[in-house]
Length: 629
Image 1 (cartoon, helix red, strand yellow):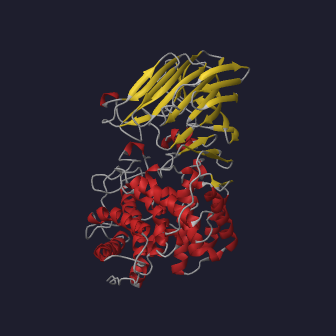
Image 2: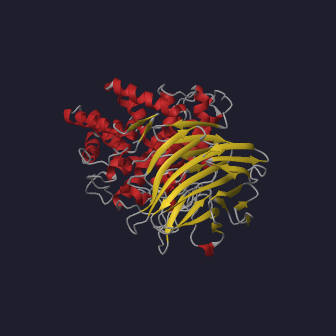
Image 3: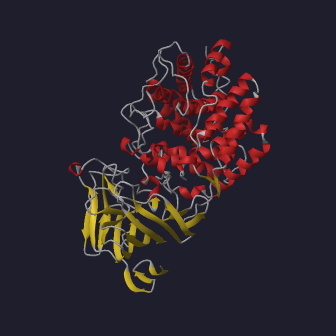
C-alpha cells in the first residue's frame, strides 16, 4: 500500500518552482490516463522501433517512470491538494506495473536483457529511478518482490553494450545490483572497465566523441554529462579521483553551454535523437546541485526554463496528449529507426531542477543580462558556436557520423552549420542527401546525391573555419574532392569551395531552408545570380559571388510537391546555386547566404573586388567586409 502524503509546512514557493511542477504534472496526466490495471506499460501511440515489441513496451514504462520520479520528489517539498490524488494513483500503477513487467510468467513480462538489446538502456535508467524512488517504491516491496526485480535486472550483467554512451548503463545497472546484493568483486571490476572505456572517448573542451558513432552532438548533454553527475551524486565516494575528473569536465563543458541556446530558449537541431527536445538541459541543474557548475543559480534556472518553455509552448503533443515524435511539432519522419512512441520521454531528464528545494537560490536569484553576438571555438568537437541577433548557430568544422551508422542520416551532422529557428530538411529519398546548408554532388546519369560525411577539420577560429572532405560513395564510384572555407558576419555566411571531380557532376550549394505553414504567405524572387524568399517574419537570400552558373529552388509549396521534409513546418523553400563540372577539372565557387529577420540586412552585397584570393564586399547596412579567401 502507498502511504498518504502529508502536506509539508511550506507557506509559499517561488512561481518558477511551481511552474516546473505543473509542467511535469501536465505531461504526466495524459500518460496516466493510459495506465490500465493489469498492464505493465503505457500504450503510447507512435512508430514501432527496430528493436522489438518487448523493448518498446519497456521504454513506455521506464521513461515515463523517470518523469514521475522527478515530479514525486518535488512534491515532498511542496504540493497542492490537487496533486495528491494523481500522485497516489500513479504510485499504485507504477508499483504494480513493475511487478507485472518483471514477472517471467506474466503475459506482461518485459523479457530479459541480452547482448546489445535495448533493455540494457532502460535497465540502466531504472537503476537511477529506483534510487530516486527508494522511500516510496523500492522499500515498500517485500523481499520476494525485490528479488524478482533483481533477478530480472541481473539478466543484463555482462551483456554487450554499444561502444558509446551506452556503457554508462552497465555502470548504473551494476551499481544498483551491488547496493542491493552487496559489493561484488567482479561487478566492481566491470564498472571500472566501463569507466575506463568511456574515458577513452574524451576529446577535450568538456566534449566526448560518442564512441563508435564518431559524433559530437547533444548526447554530450543527454548522456555524457548527465550520467556522471548522477554517479557522483549516488556513488562518487567510491572513487573520488574519478569523481573529480568527471566534475571538472562537466564544469568545462557547461562554461560555454549557454551559447547553444537562443533567446527563444531553442537550441539548434543538430545530431540524432533531437526528439528528446528539452533533454538538452539535462546536466545543468544536476551540476548546480552537486556544486560543480560554472553557471550561477539564475543562469542555470533561466537556461533550463527557457528551453522547457520553448517546447511546451509549441504543438508537441500527439493525439493522446503525450509527447510526440518530432521537434517543434509532431513529425515522426525526422526520428531514427530506434525510436518508438515512448522514446520522447527521455526528455524527463530535463526535469532535474525539480530535485532542488524550493528554498534553493536556483529558483529566486535574478539573472544577469545575456551576452549576444559572440562566438566560442571548441577544439575538442571541432565546432564553433556563435550567438547572433538572438539566435544560436553551430558552425561545424569536423563533426561527422561513423560509416556504420549512416542509417541515422549523415546530414544530421554533415551540414556546414545549424541554426535555431531554421532547422533542416530531410532527404527526398534515402539515397539523396538534402540540399540545404550543404554542398552536394550528383553524377550525370545517376539519381544519387552525395553530401558531406567524413571530414578533416583544417581551421577553427572565431570568425572562420576550413575543412576538407569528398563527395561520393561506393555505389557509382563518384569522387569529388572539396576544400571549404566558411566566414560569417551577422546573419550572413560567405562559403568558398575549391572542388575537383573525377566525373561529370552537378554541384549544388543550398541556403538554410525557409520553413512556413499553409496559412503564411511567402514571396520568391530570382535573377541570374541571386535567389531569395521571405515571409512576414524572416527571409533567406543566396547570392552568387564566383563560379556558379545557374540558380534554383528546392521547395515544398503544397502537398503535390511530395511528403513534408522540413523539421520546422509543413512547407519550405531552399535557395540553390548550381555548377556543372567536367571530369578532371577544378573550380572555385563562392556564395553569400543570409538567414535572418532584418529586411535591411537581407539586401544583397556589392562585390567590389575579387583578386588573387582577396574578396572585398560592401553592404548598405553592414558596411565593408574584406576577406582573404
